[in-house]
Structure formats: structure tokens, C-alpha cells
Length: 239
Image (cartoon, rainbow, N blue to C red; front, side, top):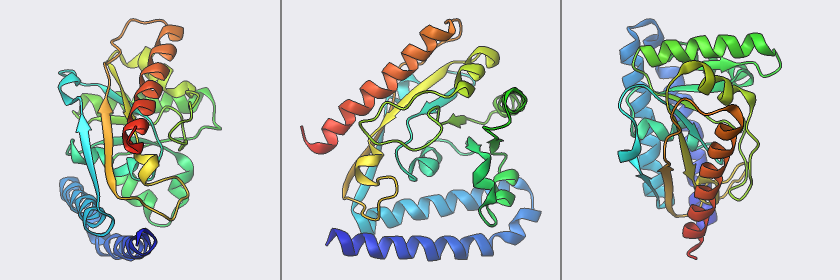
């Protein structure tokens, strides 16, 4: 049953996304807020599909910990689901994305219009400076900024080493960084055809306020994400 549910979901998701990408091309020329609303509708349609076809729900915890004012969300990254998850709690998130994703047909046009932030991880310090400038702009404009500090998807029980970009943002942006743990990879694994029923948990951890040195920040962020991941993985497994 799980196989057939996954098969139907994957087919519907692929076909529906292609239809939406084509249908929304004229919206790229319209005021940006219309595109944001349209993309949110697409995201929530995916949430609806996963509920109906996969019996897969999701839950956010710890939202009371979110600071007042601008902040950066530094999330674990275990699944493709994570790249749409934060639309559930914020109207207009700005994701920091690897530049390679901009090679996906039509994706680049949408990402630029949505003011996503591309980073070329092979371009060195110049790329980091451009990322910092763009993140500051998004924060000043009231957008929530989401970054996956490990840089790529990892297994639910894996400790993903932090990339230098998150430490540079913490040091230069002067806003709290909110670690986020999750267990999405248990249900919707990386490179996995099968999607399991259950409840994905996304959990905000205690924010790291400005002022820590680099080593302390690195330790706090890694510990809060990984310990949360481990606990949520045990919960998903029923332990």
C-alpha cells in the first residue's frame, strides 16, 4: 500500500508542478505579491496532496521561541519537503539556495522573482559577501531568511558539518539565529521513492543571540540541531 501511495503521489506531484510552472509564467510579469500568493497556493496544494495520498501530516513546535524582529532560521535539511516547509508559517520566506539549482529549467526565473538568495559555493569569499548583503536586504524588508547550514540533505541520524556561510551571516548580520531540528528524512527520505505515513515534526530550538564567538556559535548550532534531530527521530520511530 505504501508503495502504491508513493507512486501515485510522485506522479501527481511531478505532473502538477509542471502544469503550475507553465501556467504561472505570465504571473512573472505581474506585481511580485501576486506570484508570492500563487506559489503559496501551490505549496499548500502539495501539503494537501501529502495528507490525502500519503497520510503524511506535519507539525511545528516551539514557535513561541521565535524572536521579535528580524532573525535567521538555520534548519536541518533531510528532505526535499524542507524546501517548502516554512511557507506553512511565514508568508514570504527567502531561502538561501545553492546556485546549482538555478540550472533547473524555469526554476531560476521563479527563484529570482521570489527574491531567493543564490550562493555559489565554489566562488569563495566574494560569494559569501554577496550572500551577506542580500540576506541583510531581505531581513530589512521584513522577509524571513531560511538557510540550511549543512549545505545539502543529510540522513536523519547524521551530523552535518556546518558550512562557513552560516557563521559569516551570524557574525555580520547581527540578528538571532534560530536552530531548527526535524525528522522529515524518516518519512520523506533523500533520494527515496517511498514516502511513509505519519507526522513530520519541525521544532524551533532556543535562538542563538548575537555576541558569541565563532567556535561557541558553531558548537551551539550543531548541538541544538543534532540533539533535536535525534530526539525527533526516536519519536518518529515510536521509541
